[in-house]
View 1 (cartoon, rainbow, N blue to C red):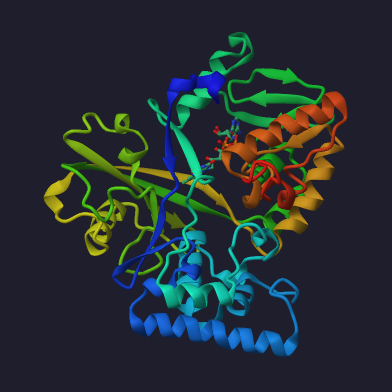
View 2 (view 1 turned 180 degrees about the horizontal axis):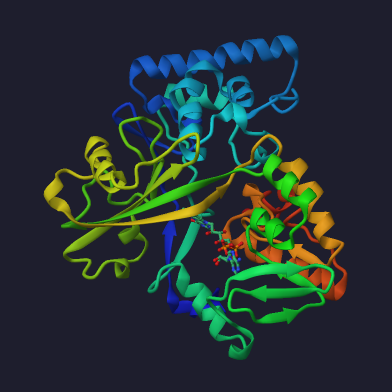
Length: 405
Ligand SMILES: Cc1cc2nc3c(=O)[nH]c(=O)nc-3n(C[C@H](O)[C@H](O)[C@H](O)COP(=O)(O)OP(=O)(O)OC[C@H]3O[C@@H](n4cnc5c(N)ncnc54)[C@H](O)[C@@H]3O)c2cc1C
């Protein structure tokens, strides 16, 4: 990263994330900060946890031991009635755009913070926040050019004649090891590393059994990104926040980022403007009216107190990403474990966010490392860690105190 953009190319931030709920702000992770809720909801959440604790000590079971059939079962058994109904179930349905009962559980180990009843009780007593940001929870963002600046800078360091943009692949012949592009040009390969979405790749390869496996097991959701350019300055409630989660029905978005906070260069003149970026999920289960989504977003920003009035809105920008999240659906692993090895028989290595379809290892760092590791495997024979061992790469590093990736 430093080589790509230089030491001075970055701005460093504390990872402040919050949940907007019941008319108030609760720091993330929600389950450790329920003392911030209004009295009725606070009691409901705590009683749910207590009941769970009592049931658990009866059963002498750990939260990870029961074989949950789906994510909803895991949520209810881990968070109790109150937290499940008020936050976990509505938030997860909103972000995934599928009912939690249709999601698997294997991906969650490092992604969902399981509550410790004693810690929650202590926070209720002292009213002390348990926040996930602190000295080890910093992130950096490019000073100029947004996230894409990293990729552009890395690409500039590579031999230009080896890079071709904007050429869609329309067929792959695994027998002759030939890739055909839409302009009819062809290229042959020894090993093909691809980040084309796995379901699309199966069609390009033209194998019936792979297509059937993909259709049976792979689900995804789309994301509508709504950028809102605003006049003036953020209010005190929003000012220092990085991103916020919205589980309730009073806003269409599940998450909003204060984008002008990441870098002042994300707006034309930080003295006059600021900006928010909202994400609205979409799927066959949760359709979105594209014509209304920007207006609904502004309405939601007013309803949740992110902005004070409509006059602040300078402009809106909407971008729909067809493949936004690879859904950890119930039959996902079965599909991946069937398709990837078969493609490898033809020296096709499908990696990346939708190439390998594994949400838990599909952020930028994960996706890049999947590429690095498959090259190392092909050249040096070293094993791939990120794709097949998410729980290792997402675990806290014993020395550096942060996730391996
Ligand atoms: C809303 C949203 C928010 C996100 N936020 C973060 C974040 O905060 N932090 C983070 O680390 N990650 C974030 N991510 C994830 C990040 O975008 C991915 O990790 C990253 O883009 C994955 O890289 P990739 O190369 O695997 O796949 P992609 O970036 O999806 O690249 C796949 C490429 O294949 C191309 N392609 C598809 N079909 C064909 C074809 N037939 N022929 C040729 N090319 C084709 C596509 O055009 C695309 O360029 C976010 C993603 C979304 C959608």
